[in-house]
Image (tube, rainbow, N blue to C red; front, side, top):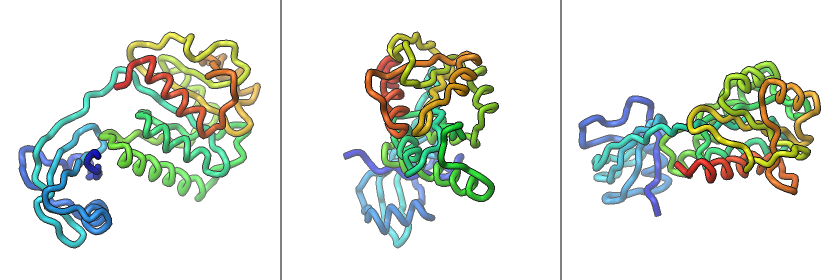
Length: 245
């Protein structure tokens, strides 16, 4: 089993030192919940790709003393994958966010689609956005990622069309699309934007606007997937075609 991952503040990873003290919420979880002890290995990351492989030298209540064994940095992949996930009821959007993070997505954009039953307004918007960020962090730790995906501000149609225009390739999943995802040529580098609608799918007006801005409508197969599984399934297919990084 791989070593558990704990996140530290950006810029706080050791640089040339051999001892690190892990405290705070991550230290309490490591020492008091996971009960890690001397000799066990842990990973530290600041979420930007930098990481440290460490071993526990001493366990305290709520903290660990760690010995740094290796420092490294994961290189940035040439292809940047962005999931535009429509808001959905029953936490199906959160399930998509969680799985997409495990599948190494680079950025997640919450989208207020025409057919989204869930609406982010006022205080709810801030709370809901924070929940998406928390979901991403938990999935990062579970999947041992050393880069934390960005969670962009809530996008409405205008913001989404702007992202489509600036992307190197924009794909919108739609059940009536004649073109398969596997038929699309991927760029060797740059940003690939993947748009997934809510429970009722992408509306006709949205599809017209998205394709008018340059997006390509694609389908995954002959079945219709839930909003919680469509994005992750498409991401897995894109990774397979581009080569897992």
